[in-house]
Amino acid sequence: MTADTGLRQAGTGAPFDETYDMVTKAVHEHGISTATISDVLDALGITNRVLDTRLQRMSGDQQMVFGTAYTVSWVPVRKGPSILAASPSTWEEVRDFLVPEVLDGRGMIYVAGSGPLVTDAALAGGLSTTYFFEQLRFEALVLGGAIRDRDVVEQSTRPVVATNFVPTDTQGAYRVESAGTTCLVNRALVHTGDWVFSDGNGTVVVPAARLHEVLAASTATGSTEQDVLRRIRAGDRLPDIIAEIGTI
Image 1 (cartoon, rainbow, N blue to C red):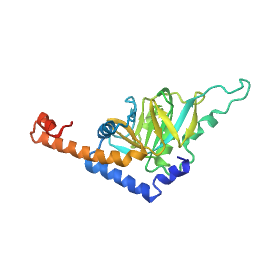
Image 2 (image 1 turned 120 degrees about the vertical axis):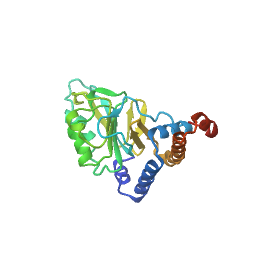
Image 3 (image 1 turned 90 degrees about the horizontal axis):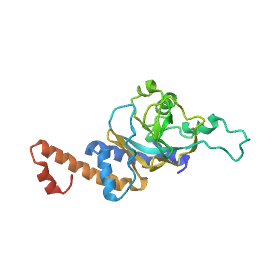
Image 4 (image 1 turned 30 degrees about the vertical axis):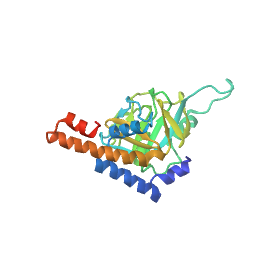
């Protein structure tokens, strides 16, 4: 997916708006959680779509947030073909993490990764987080590693998902390989345009091509779970309910 199609997808066209409304209705009316979606992904044989459990909420509450992924791929800085040649400035290496091609991030979740989780250098900080949320209006940030500037980040009402706070930045150690294509968050490959769902349980990624299928199954599962919960609270025994419906 190109940056341009990503921009059209996020909040500027009727097809996207209709899909976003459909997802919103499913989540809020049927009590869908990431646990529900995870179960559905397992049942459909869609593997490796739950992000590493070390990723936790660093800001905002634990409520569900969702949107299409806009990805930034980081890689370690390595020497070039000549050890005598001047290296690019650190700004040249990292500037694309600010996704200058994105003018409106509504309906999108910023996702950054470098393969193995980067816990010793921050993939974003207080200034960039404020910019992403207040100017570009991303729904959330999901970072495959650390973030810094805790005093600023924790003030945000929108969710930041990361591994830990750290004082060190990435400059000189990592560079942006690409934006608006794919990124690897530990072992999970995320494509720009995939749907990201994140709540207090964790974060899951649904391939864009499977969204309607996953959402339909999740809606049915969510309704069943809400009915089971109602019956338990009314005094029904859980073993009897499981024997009746064949799932838990």
